[in-house]
Length: 113
Length: 113
Image 1 (cartoon, rainbow over the protein chains, first blue to last red):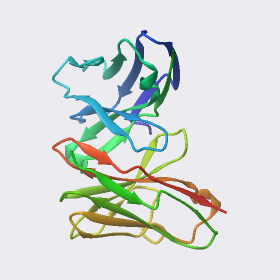
Image 2: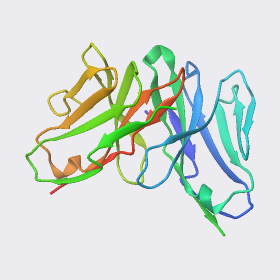
Image 3: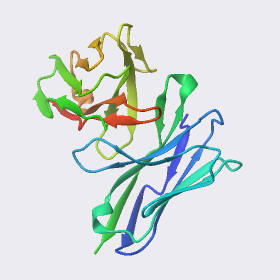
Image 4: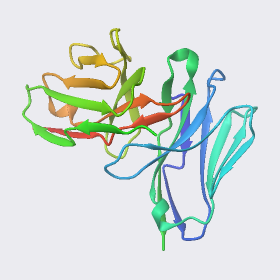
């Protein structure tokens, strides 16, 4: 059972455009929702994260929108740059379950110059 | 933030042999995790390794196949035993380095021939 579903699987956006990645979760016991960015040959790196009692969090060009009632959250990358080309993973953490990260399936983003 | 060094970065191994992957964190951490990632896919948790206790394995992973050591608060190893081509994958270690912060190594790309 996939607890965190992510879409789309891949995304192509022009430089300066907006990249939007969506995730949906099933377990309401999750208590933290991070996004990770992974470049080829590297491990995932934390990009931005949000608690479920917050509806939006912005850090630079990256914004998380969180809809608790719908059990959905999304990542918006504003003014997308070629250097943003990477795979993005949403995730969820449940402290009571041993701090394990549950990852979404990933979205490969390509920003064309 | 913490830095995780993982080695080897890649290896090509004969079927039936074993490979031990090392993970070194530059600070003391309580929880470490081992993941498997098929190229282009998401991360699957293999096990959680806490210092001073037996590793906890996820469904589908067993200690005989993936023995883990955690001798101190900065180091862990994962052994892939009796390898078959199906074990070809990227193996990543991770550590809980903040309240909700996870740091990942760069991974070990394993090819079994």
